[in-house]
Length: 150
Ligand code: HEM
Ligand code: HEM
Image (cartoon, rainbow, N blue to C red; front, side, top):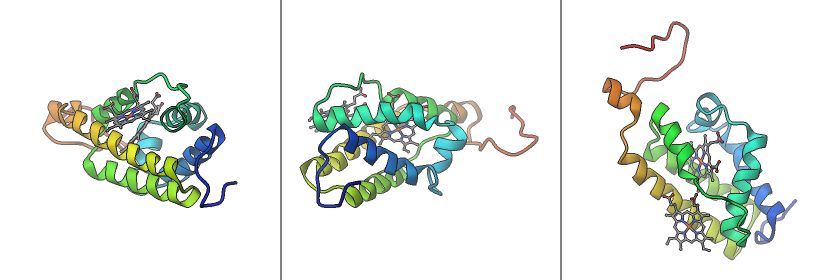
């Protein structure tokens, strides 16, 4: 376990950060459902990929192959991802980083997340969600007897 005041130093630190983040994100009242109910996130498959993403950014590991945007475009086609979702994601990320680490890499982790979140949001906004395009209004897909047609 790391104590606040120590910076992110290695792959294990990145994994600790990622796991702590998902501990919050999956139960979050604002964005949790996107991971659990919409994406049905397989956490054990996802943690190594997202740890590689951060180890590539923060440690120069080059273990992440790229293409981070695509799953978000797929998600957005099902449930429109709005600015508020990204803002919430960033609050949880910053809180988790600050709780566990402090230092230049910790600052970089927050800064880079901010850039990526805004880049993703901008790209998504140029792309109409399929559900909006098809029906004109966002529709939540839940409950029995849901109709798939308008
Ligand atoms: C140590 C330096 C940096 C490293 C190692 C790094 C690494 C990465 C990686 C691995 C991705 C994901 C790419 C993908 O999934 O295809 C990414 C995305 C991104 N980075 Fe960096 N980055 C660095 C510095 C910066 C700086 C200085 C900026 C801006 C001033 C920046 C802005 C972005 C943005 C906007 C994205 C998202 C692009 C998108 O998919 O829309 N990064 N970066
Ligand atoms: C509203 C905000 C966000 C939501 C709901 C969200 C949700 C998701 C979901 C559901 C996946 C796919 C998991 C899977 O099925 O494999 C994913 C993948 C990923 N997300 Fe996000 N995300 C958000 C924001 C961000 C931000 C801001 C970043 C970066 C700073 C990020 C980085 C990634 C990366 C690196 C992956 C892995 C892509 C791969 O498999 O290579 N996400 N996200």
